[in-house]
Amino acid sequence: QKEVEQDPGPLSVPEGAIVSLNCTYSNSAFQYFMWYRQYSRKGPELLMYTYSSGNKEDGRFTAQVDKSSKYISLFIRDSQPSDSATYLCADVDSNYQLIWGAGTKLIIKP
Amino acid sequence: DADVTQTPRNRITKTGKRIMLECSQTKGHDRMYWYRQDPGLGLRLIYYSFDVKDINKGEISDGYSVSRQAQAKFSLSLESAIPNQTALYFCATSGAGDSPDTQYFGPGTRLTVL
Image 1 (cartoon, rainbow over the protein chains, first blue to last red):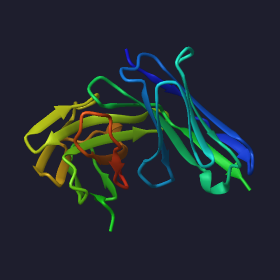
Image 2 (cartoon, chains in turn red, yellow):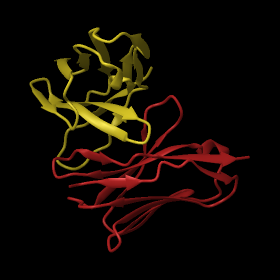
Image 3 (cartoon, rainbow over the protein chains, first blue to last red):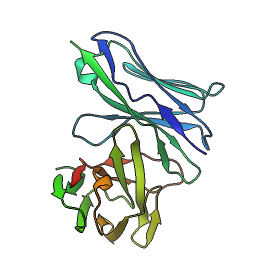
C-alpha cells in the first residue's frame, strides 16, 4: 500500500531558526516528490518539487530525498513569521495522482 | 481575479439535505479534482476528471457525485449530507501531460453538516 507519513505538529520555532520538515514514503512509482504550502484559510500551493535522490535548493528552501531511508525533507533557513503555514508533502503514484501526507503545521515565533 | 474559484466559501446544512459545491477555472486546464481535507488526515481525493467525458472515482467517492459541465466547470454533490461529511473541500486543476504536473487549488469550501 502506498503511503506518505507526516507528523501533523504543530512545530513551533523562533524566528531565524533552521526548520526541518520530514515525511516518509513506502513505495514510490516515480521518485517524484512535491512540497505544498498552505496558509490559513487558503488552498495549498506548490512550493518545490524534487526528483529521485539529492537536494534541490530555492532561496531559503531546500528539498531533500534520501532513497535509502525513504525520507523526504524540507529545510527552511532563516525562518520568518511569514513562513508560518501548513506544509504538505506528496508523492506521485503510477496513475499520476498525488498521495498526500497529513501536513505539518509550522509556527514561527517573532 | 482568482484562477480557480469555488462557491460557496462556507455552508452550513442539515443532515439529509442535498448540497452542491461548484468550481470554475480560467487556467484552461483539462484536469480537475475534488478533495476533502480533515485535520490530521491531509487531502483525500474524492473524484477527478481528465476531460469533460472522463470522470473517475478517487479514494473516498462514496456519498458523493460529480458533474463536469464544461472544461472550466466541475461540481461536487452530496446527495444526502451526513455529519461526517463536515470538512474543508478543495477543487484543483492541472494541465495535461504525461509527467506529474502541478495542481492549482481553489480557496476551499468549509462545509458543516449538522
